[in-house]
Image (cartoon, rainbow, N blue to C red; front, side, top):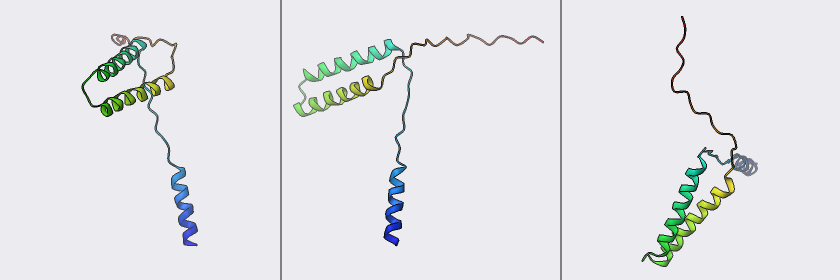
Length: 92
């Protein structure tokens, strides 16, 4: 009986594991700037004197990041309104 309860408890604990998601709002020009920087870093690493295994690791890491960015990116067509410069003064 103890083994059955232990197994059921273990399964219950594993079933509650969940991922956390982080959403960030970044302007398109900023994303393009960082995307181009990542491509430049890959090109520099490819032409460097680093050992082949290190270059492969760097390029694979950047490719993985870019794939995740491309897969999860969503275009928000709404333009955020700028914040007011100062709050209007109250009339007494």
